[in-house]
Image (cartoon, rainbow, N blue to C red; front, top):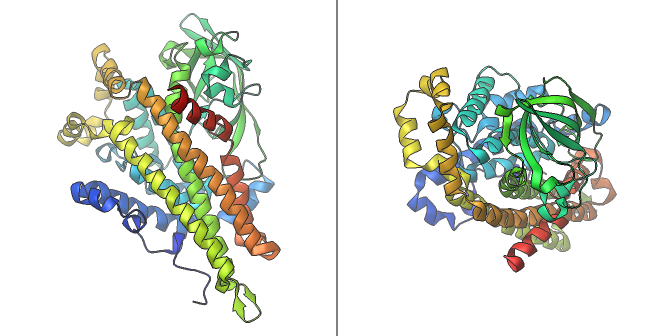
Length: 480
């Protein structure tokens, strides 16, 4: 084959889920709709990543290098029209109703084109995910209504999750480390709510966010015991976006400082009270860490695809680089690691659907209610008003905490940490190995291989450094 577009990655036929994870054939027999949805999601995501993202990601990267606040709104709107940014929301309520497995395949496909552009689409579930930890019915319905309305009106609506502080990075994600951190942000209890001062840093979507889900200590001397979770609208008085960071990789995803100066947060926007903030953080991490690992899988696959394409075009004398046996052996080794990781990522997603928050969407009572109720009622102010009643508001929270107790959360921190470390380390390893094979010529910006390398490195740091993830893995197994 003389073309550089080999039938691999984004240029392979889709769906190929069962070809890569053949054990799912048994599940397809038992639950055909579940696997059919995942296959349809993979096909849609691959088509979007190949046809819409891939032709423009290098131009976006270059534009963001000049101006870190640059954002490709046209690409975002194309994703928005396909509902890719509200994929987990039930179909009857305006979303796609995709399972965790379908969303995992979405992440792999988009990140293989560009992790930064993918995060602009997929990371925007932070608001819904944060609300589902507490799962107060009124808050969840309100956020779904806001997200669906924004999608239908083609209006940008962004959420960010603010954990990291200038004096505390991964410390804020670990109970033991929190005992030694010195918070840069502080929430003071006042009449009717809290007054927040301080700074958060390296916040994804921070410069775009309409709402910020922030974990902030109420007592700077006892951060672990007093960490709380707040919902802060970006138009609140005293809220200020600081520097938008210039980054080496993932330039398309904006990362910013956030400053709070006497920002008042009413009691209604206190999502978790002091002492429950760390639990809230850990539960979000128990889902997102695994998805970051799947993002690493996508970066690795994209780097290999670009390397294979270059090797198919590069000639050394009368032979192509890809015809060299040592190159084929190296590519085969990477293919082996990528598909092994894919199986681990699929297993993690299956477990989310079966045992974690995603099982809420599969409850018979909820499915029956969604089926029976007209759509206009599900998104209506009348239902929102009913959800604010004491009985209904807390019903979802009680049910969710029965289904996802603390032990399940910590189990999934462990599962997710393994996928995260394996996926992000593999992304850096594959990108580096491809760079070695293609040499200086292949590292020219036009091939995208050097971009894959830059994008891979930061994944080893965020969502908890891989060192901290390893400590979580060890502690779960050895200390139980």
